[in-house]
Image (cartoon, rainbow, N blue to C red; front, side, top):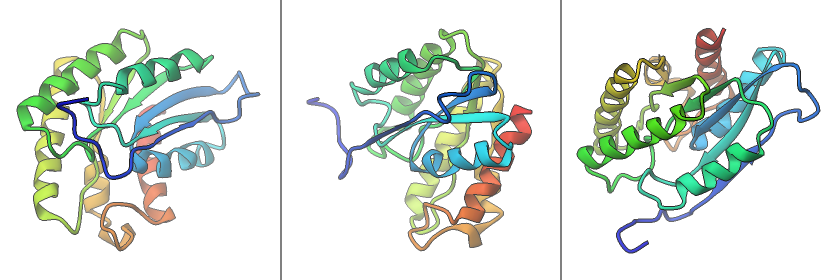
Length: 191
């Protein structure tokens, strides 16, 4: 990983929701810690009509182990009706051009699964204006690529910016109320 910058803490969080249930709709939410916080509320607020599995990770798009780890995750999931994809709050070492190339590559990879893919825009960063500018630029890139591939785009950024009171003090993560707002936004699009 010579040209790759790691996070201070590298982690993966894989979650299969109610594995015994093979009749409900099932989505795989690929994202970061925001996806980990939101995922359970998608299931809860849908009354388990939509089971939201998760692949949360700190891996940036240039991490050489992101795709292989994700491939392993996808092979283990017995049923998947749709994929939710977000990756914008990690890898701040990437330039906009690198991010665009890598995001495009990831969308090509995900669409090859044959499952509907939803692009989710990243939430804001309250306490770091420079990082927030990067998030804004990345969201523009993600939205343009969603349009390029004719994929639905879910604007979680708009939800987050309209509810700054739902952030916890770190300015990145959310209260349960904030995660519920994000989950409701996702459910509006999935339904």
